[in-house]
Every structure is written in C-alpha cells, then in structure tokens.
Length: 231
Length: 231
Ligand SMILES: N[C@@H](CCC(=O)N[C@@H](CS)C(=O)NCC(=O)O)C(=O)O
Ligand SMILES: N[C@@H](CCC(=O)N[C@@H](CS)C(=O)NCC(=O)O)C(=O)O
Image 1 (spheres, helix red, strand yellow):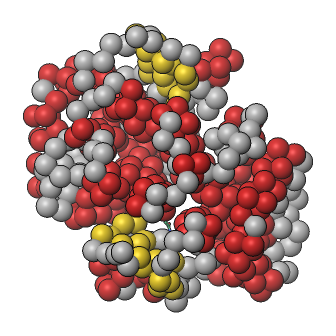
Image 2 (cartoon, chains in turn red, cyan):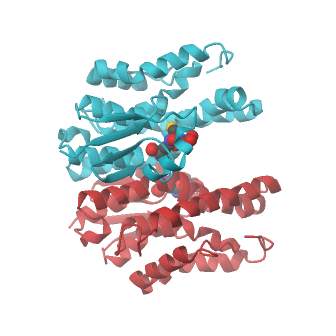
C-alpha cells in the first residue's frame, strides 16, 4: 500500500475537514505538521509539495495533490470508503458537487474567513485597522450565506445531501464553526443549522473533538481579545 | 429523453463555459435567456429554478441544478460525453478537481471578476468610486493567479489536465478572458497562456466564436469607457 503523507495545520479549516475524513475512515496516514503561524508553508521546500503553498496537501505514493475538496474526492476513491461519503448515484453526487462549488465563495469566504479576519486576525495579529463598517459588512455577508445554507442546502435533510453524512458536510462544518473562536455561533437563531451541527457531532463521535482540540485551545488563548460582538 | 432547459446569460463567464460544453458535444437543449442587466435572475420565479438566483442553472427533466462546475460534471455523466472532458482515471480526475476547486477564489475571483468590477462595472455602471490603489490591487491579484496558472497548471501540458481539453479548460477560459473587455489580455507576456488559449480555440472551432459573439459585441459597446490600462 502506498504511503500517505498529510500536510496540515490543525488551525486551518480545510485541513480539519480532511482530517475528519481520514480519522472517521481510519485511513492510515503520516502527519506532516506545517505550521501557518511560523509560515512553514512559505518555504521553497513546501512549494515542491503544494505549488500554491497552502495546506492541506497530500502525497500518496508519488502522487501530490492540494485543494481540500479534490483531496477528499480522491481519498474516497483510493480507499473505497463507504458510498455515503461521496455517493456514486448521479443526482446525489451532483447535489454534493453543487454544494462544494458554492462553498468556496460562500461558506469559506463569507462564512469562515471574512468575519474572523476582520474582527481578529487583521486588527490583532497583523495590526491593520479595520473600519466598523467593514466589520459589519462581514457579518452581513455571513448571514446571507447562512440563509442559503439553512433554507436551501439543509431544507429537508439531516445532512446536506440527505440522511447521511458526506464530504460536503465535512467541508461546511470546517468553515462555518470558525467564527466560534470570536463568539459568533452560526447556529444562533437557526434551529436547522444547530440540528445539523449536532447530527455531524453524533455521526463523527470522538473524532469530532480530537480533530478540534487545537482549535478549542486557540479559542481559549485568544479569549478576551475581541469585545463581545452583537450577533 | 428528458428535456434539458438551460438558464443563462451570454455575458456571464460560467454560463459561457457550460454553453461551450453543450455546443461542443451537440447536446440538445432549450435556451432560457435570463438577463442579468434587467435583473431577470432576481425574481421569485427564478428563485424556484436557482435558490442562489444565479446563472447558469439547468433543469433536466425534473432535476434542478445550479453551480456551473456541478452542471458540467453532471452533464458529462448524463450524456456520456467523451472521456477526455472529465476523465474517469483517478489521478487525472483528481488533477481536474484540484484545478476546479482552486478556480473559484483564483481564476474567477482574482481573474475574471475583480479587475473588471473595479475598472468598469463599479465606476461606470454602478457609479461607485474606486480608488487607484484598489484598482491596482486587482491587477496584482490577477497576476498572482496567472503565475500559478501558467507555472503550475499549464506547466508541461497543452491543456490543464494533459493533452486533451477538459471541463477545467472550459471553466478557466470563461473567466480568464473576461478582462479582455477592458483591454487586459492575460496572454500578454505569457507564451504558455497564449498557446493554451490557441489550443482551446483550435479544439472548439466555430463553437468558440459563436458562444463568445455576445461578449465581443459588448466589448464594442463599452469601448472607450476605460482609458488604456497599464498592463
Ligand atoms: N481552497 C483551498 C484553501 C487552502 C488555504 O487557503 N489554506 C490556508 C490555511 S486555511 C493556507 O494554507 N494559507 C497559506 C498561508 O497563509 O501561508 C483548500 O480548500 O485547500
Ligand atoms: N459559482 C457560480 C457563480 C454564478 C454567478 O455568480 N453568476 C452570476 C453571473 S456571472 C449571477 O448570476 N449573478 C446574479 C446577479 O448578478 O443577479 C457558478 O459557477 O455557477
């Protein structure tokens, strides 16, 4: 069996999504911790692994791959994981692909990234000024994304693509819980999002907590940096 | 055979990508012109077709789908198009998925959208002021995207995934030629990008021009609105 190396940082949302999959499916892999804060991604050596110098990335035997979703799709095939992760039935798969392509400019950009960047990383870590208007704009964008997520993608389902968990849920949860670190819980006032989050935890069991351990610690570390947000 | 309805506007980049595929594969479809300028996407009726109120969208029989890439993947299966469009071999497919997930925040966001929004749509159509710095930032982002596109995705290939055209090329060309409408040609000083563009035109023949006819007309209409850009 070809060896699988996994380049990741547990504080990266897409990395956690891939790790949830690896752990839930008991796929053997070697972790190559690639630290974002010390810029371990920005070396010439790492560029040979991932040309975009982003995590996650994998090397499976000789085969290199980046982009979290492409990695999940590849792993589902290479390790013949149970069908529900990435169903082979055409319409189910299409619904998952629909979510996964919508994901990047929505759950990730407007969901996981903007709010957290504007309220904490830019002002507190990079010492860049962010206007109140700009901050509020990120909350508005998050809410728009959640409206579509709740009213369309979770409409009549326990999970995005039906009654079973799939790689779409793993990608979504990775991003959507990110604002949690500054006290913005996306399930607030959204019972369907809350129920979905509980369904994911139930489906993943102990794996959910172990993969999020570093994030919980980080939350503790930065507690108090951001004043309570009106969300 | 179930009927295929295609909701599109020929001035939309992802719509053109899907239309190139439909035409190149001679898939029978009915066009549902959904005009962006008159906001035909923003009606309650259209929301029943596409919950995000975006084009493109399809209805195939009873099955509704939005997100251009998900549509292309679905159509490739439903109409059993030649394998090169979306190869079944795992590593080739992974390479295409890698591009297609990288695409949204790169070729589309930094490639097709930002420059065009900042130099023409925001200032000239929506009468919003855009600072010089903001405009130049969009050019820098475009160049970063093109660096990765040229040096990685087109490294030793005629097309993104090898010697034959795939849905990744259709998505990429849709976005990357968009800045053309304001005189920013992404092939400038990039022989590999230029050669790739020629390869796509050669592979698609007359279909390339017919799908782009409305865009060429639009280019003519807006000519002169933007002073020459230092690119
Ligand atoms: N679309 C990519 C996003 C990857 C990405 O942006 N990763 C971030 C961490 S979350 C990164 O590696 N950034 C590099 C850096 O900041 O140096 C994916 O899903 O894999
Ligand atoms: N990621 C989507 C993007 C779709 C999208 O943003 N479409 C634009 C036109 S290019 C749209 O319909 N905008 C709606 C509007 O402006 O009202 C896809 O690839 O299908």
